[in-house]
Length: 198
Image (tube, rainbow, N blue to C red; front, side, top):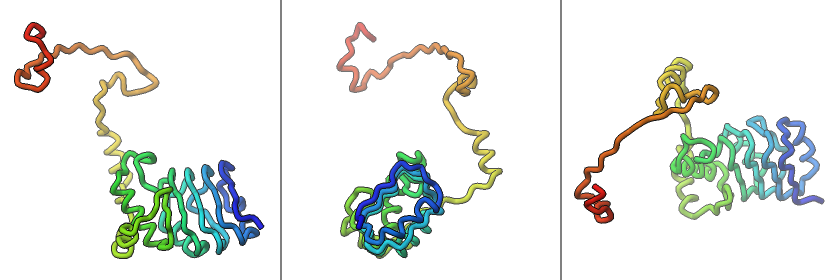
């Protein structure tokens, strides 16, 4: 009667690789980190499972994942989704910020109210209360960008580099010459500069 199972770093991306989990009805902890699991992830009913980690996979659809987990893992108390697009943070995407992560936590707690830990961080009483009130409205939805808008945005991508050095494959050294003149006579930095250095 196994209670702990780690299938990390198997790089398995299909449903068949998880079919055998149905034989582990007494499973309490399941580690599926660093695989290629995506939005088609389907777990069998695991009524005793209280810990599930899905870090560093390819999960993008948070809402369908949470609905599935609510159905098949009713005892879930610890969930970690770090390293997935579905878990918005600055490590995964530069477009994400702390507010995106807070909304994500609120939405997850709304969908899975029994969680005690989310992404290795304890769920606070304040987060739980906010999830009850606002959780349904915290789903992070980005506007869909048409292909025309995407093409226009890529054409006008700003870069401070000269045009000769923008391509990594055709790199040529760029030499610039600039003469800086210090003229901040009333700045705080002046107390460290002698008059003969001006």
